[in-house]
Image (cartoon, rainbow, N blue to C red; front, side, top):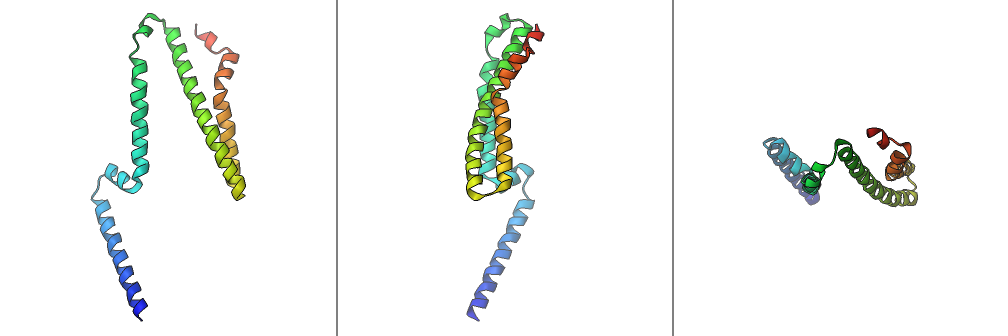
Length: 142
């Protein structure tokens, strides 16, 4: 009998807390609600975007590119993009290898398929610069 009363008190307390949280969430704006629901993940994503923006700004402030022609500027930009693809590919292949090891450990066929596909895509990203140079696409810019 005593346990039954305690359980009812806990359920009532949980319902009241949920109602307060819902009322509080409805009064918030969309960005506030996103930060409230996702917390650390949203803050980390905002920090990552700001970090990317602040690290990319100095590459546009270089005054030496003013002396270059249009094709050299485009070639340099393509080189930077291909370098970023290579770095992203290396990070993805490291992550996919770790996730693939965990998928084999847990005997999860969906994760095995997903991580194998991610590994293949990351290898393509790593060697994309080689493919572009071998195809001669950059030679047609001039």
